[in-house]
Length: 185
Image (cartoon, rainbow, N blue to C red; front, side, top):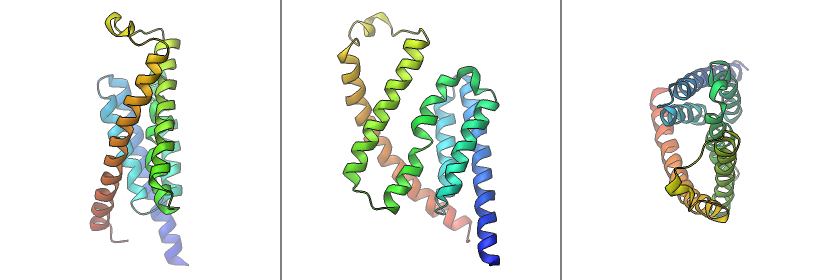
């Protein structure tokens, strides 16, 4: 019984540290305005740490805590920058681990993730450009109207997702090996 209790305590501690690092990086990235991508990368990597020990519940709670804490730390001012993380990037590593755990066909999973990513891009477009009142430069806006915009989102978005998904799987494998070397638990 002691081993199981220690394992739960370790999961909570690892997930808590993961949440703190992810929320801090995300909030700093969003508030700086220039480091949003860096904040996303650090936050996604931090959420992948509990997953390296197969702590899916801990990673899920770290993701939820990250979103809440990022808003509390000031990201509410520019919440639209948090939306892609909340809708896709923060959940993606968890979905990848579940895909492997439940042996979901990789091509089916990739198609579903591509539609999910494209939907996130469309939601971000509506939040930033439609509701936020921003616009593309005139040279681009004349070509990206109506169905062309959605065609670009679905084609470019899917290609980007394929590359990102591949890199995230490879990153998880490398992180698993690193955590295994550091933590012998």
